[in-house]
Image (cartoon, rainbow, N blue to C red; front, side, top):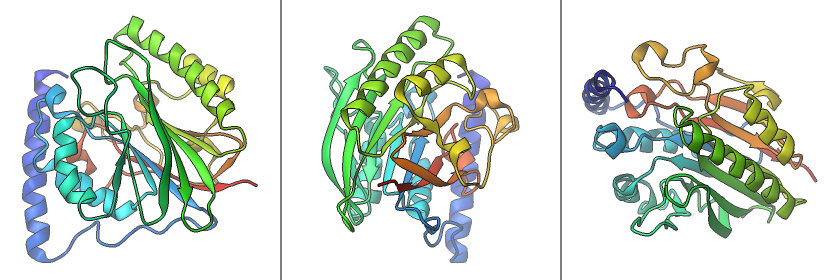
Length: 296
């Protein structure tokens, strides 16, 4: 991130804090209430890169309240978080976990010297329970490049489903990125095969735009579809990453790098990109989510 971008983000964070204070004093909140699940859907899965404070030099303080408010509003059954370092874990615990609204999954890092996994999950313990969790390393020298895998069971009917979460090296790091994509493609195909018969939902910051050759190869090898294009209803469609206020939710597809994929066991009722709720002050990525039904 360029220094000018850092300064802009810090200014934006200050503005967000001021706005939060104003809204609180007025006794209103734009994230009040919970967004209803789409008709016919059984689960909601969200993917959200919440911007690592150490890499971006932008503090968690202030942003954590905005992220928590967004997560409370959409109340996904499973949230795939990226760049959730130690400071994020410590900030979100009292805001979401201690309150019983969410629980962490794949929290413990495999890498030596790293306590927390930055590519983890939150899940709603009132709607689903955890069955299995593990982390596959895409790069043993980089603790942030992993494929996290979790199996959940719906409390209402016992149906099980799989969610994966990943965060690849940026395309500017060409060798690392290509290696990450190759390993991820293999892991993704193996995961779908391992859990044959179960709905599989793959989320994350792939650092790969729509329609790229590598992304198409991953989808073909794993047998998955892009939730954005498979959805019966697509509410909003815009870039999921921005490096300046001018590119926030732009129509530049090169910035569409966060994705949700589903296998044949899942149908997408609704897909949306969250571009309101002050998300532009919380991170350099926008949250995306999909409301999904399961096939028999």
